[in-house]
Amino acid sequence: NPFVFIVQVSKRYPCSYHSNNVCLIMLPCPRYLCCVLGDILLSLKSLLLLCGDIESNPGPVELKDIMDKLTVIASDVQEIKTSQKEACKRLDAIEVKLKEIDSVKAASMKQDRKIEKLEKTVSTLVDKMDDLENRSRRNNLIIFGLEETENENSNSLEARVSKTIIEDILHVSTSGIERIHRLGSQTPGKARPVILKLLDFRDKLTILRNCSKLRGTNISINEDFSKRVQLIRKKLLDCTKDNKRA
Image (cartoon, rainbow, N blue to C red; front, side):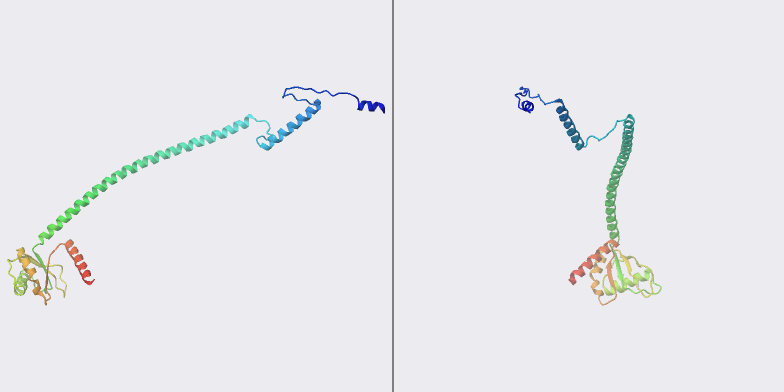
């Protein structure tokens, strides 16, 4: 068909537009523009859904929902304020108790210092009393192993000690005995110790120097000390025995 041939290969030149404007986009027809815009919108929708920041169908926001949320927030804030007030009250109570504890601690420390001072005073007084007691026992002697006799009294006991022990065995002459008696309660079959106080301290020293003459007898003579000094002397004696055994 010659007509069809002429239409297909006719010398019809297309329209071409040249411009330096970079923002100018030329499309072949309006229908093509609609297709391009549709593709762009679909791409944007897909990107927004992938982001997760936009709901698929959030729906309209009602004023009632907003007020409900604000009410919940206000209630939470009120609870926080109440809890904060209670915490503040507890902290105030703790501070008061700490102040009371500090005051009690200060008073206790003060009392401790007083007690320490009193303990030192008591210790000093005990030492002084012990020294006075030992001074009052300075002229005393205790005799062990002297058998008791029937109807024994202070006079007969003094005469017996002076004659039998001091003069006959020890060969010592004394200025006299101030007082003499036995210690403790009477026990059958057991002789109680005899305590005596000499008038002269030098007589006591002389008797102690001659106590070696009592060897071979059941009689022994010791000095008279306070309970405290006796315990100290006993500990020293035990230590001395242990050292000798070692």
